[in-house]
Length: 200
Image (tube, rainbow, N blue to C red; front, side, top):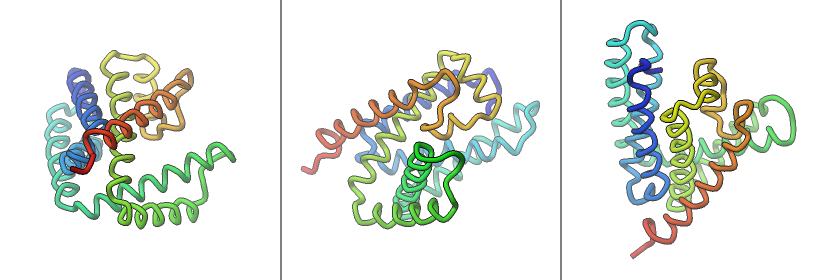
């Protein structure tokens, strides 16, 4: 979590990074890995600081972000396997969410994550295109909602609701969010396969 004064600039950076990922993620995959590594590292590191320690939060976010970015950029193949594993876990949660209540069994998540990692290594190009398009679309939505000061998004973020991290479980009153995410992701996949990721 960032201090309030830095939320809008961070949201704008999320929108820009998400847009780049959505439409040119394959071509800029190492950059996209760096962006998402930075976001993940910054989130983890800044959460270790107290909410009143603004300087500590910013320094921790920068340091954690740089470490996260470097780890994912230099671990290219590990990054691809992690993307596939993440997609497998997402599929487990989406399918289970529409067929049953609660979280999916750990065994199902683990098996689909392993299958996703193996599939990602075999079909690198397509996995990268799909993952960056949909991940970028989701980042654009979250950044846009934060930038315009959406009250439901702000309330959900401050309450720690899961919709920010889990696209298929939106906050109350945000049922349109997954639909927009899917539409933007499909557009991103189409643009990448048709233009930015096309083989020369």
